[in-house]
Image (cartoon, rainbow, N blue to C red; front, side, top):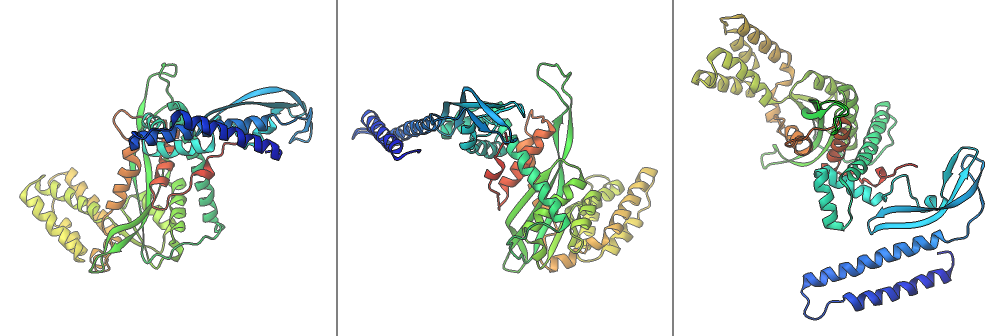
Amino acid sequence: MSTSLDKQALIDAMLKKLRQQLEEKLPDDNATLDQIEDAVEDIGTALQRELQQRIADQRAKKPRDNRLVCSCGGVARYKACQSRHVLTRQGFLSFRRPWYYCSGCKKGFAPLDQALGLEASDTTRTLREWSAHLAAHLSFEQSVRTLKTLTGVSLGETTLEMLSLQVGEALQKQQYTQSALHRKGSLPDQKTACPKRLYVSVDGVFVPVRDPWKQDGSQGALTCRYAECKVGVVYETKQDKDGKDSRVAWQDYVASFQNAEAFTPLVGLLAHKNGHHAAREVVFLSDGATWIKHLAGREFPTAVHIVDFFHAAEHLARVAEARFGKDTPESHAWQEARQKELKTGQLPTVLREITAWHPSNEQKRKIRQEEYAYFRKNAPRMQYQTYLERGYHIGSGVVEATCKRVVAQRLDQAGMHWRQETAEAIVALRAAQLSSHAPDLKPYCTIPN
């Protein structure tokens, strides 16, 4: 308040308003707890809106100057009083404030907007944060309904989508900035835990996206395709009574539709934030895809690299089915024997069994050649007996569950097709918010003028 008199006048007015609200809405002795709760909420909401409006009006009525110094160094002149409408957690706030125009830089501004911390958006940062939290977990339609139910605030679907995208884009921009600093070795130090054994796992999942399109058909027919969303998870486990790694203690995620080159430093940053450089041991677990191997070699060259056992078993199944037929007793027996050999350190025996097969046609010969090369090439990362003896996870179940939880459950529902830019922002928000160490979204809710 500008003076103590202004402040006292506001207090007196609000006390009068409170008395009026209590007299009108205070429940009687027969009210249930639900009725009491509703009455208290109504009284509080009415007072909050009234107080917010009165404070804004008092700020707007302060004496004004005819000239002000513009940020460009020129002189801005008063032009008129203009209305400003902002949606807040208490509802709509409307007030009139002086507007100035600088002929030097050809820009106008309202000093009160700057004093109140208002930005280009007609919503407050709190509503942008709420929108981002909801949109990360629910469809935009469900987010609008949930916001209305829980807070009484009404936003349109398009508005809520736009606000959540702005926050998601800001979050992702910060991630890329920090990952670039990490790659240069100049990311500011932060206190991190010293994990005994840190797991890193990466995979990809496809999401339906669309090319530029409008419902009115002005940009042509709807064309949908699938784009790969790359997903990374960093986690620690708890050990069972035998000292084996069992259930996950915590897990943090990152996800992006960018190419492997751009995604790689994001995984490195996530691991760094969770103590990668201080960990006693790092285990990189994946399905052995080429782009993932390059990522692992770039960011985690000293880690223990493991090819997911279940993907290795799928390669054994390909050989067995080509040799003995699908779902035959001979096929199942051959797969079980080879899986046991893999787990007991007998990979050379597996290779001999593959070469012992003499295919009857060129297609099957190609399968034998490809699968033999697969196991021979990945032999250093298939030391499953050693991994099991040390208590390691040898399956990529955690990252596969991550693909479902972080991406598919939000972006791959019936009838969905996304603009890739929208999907990119939403998946960044969702990965962050579902992480055990979820970041505060407030720093990403600023919209510059």
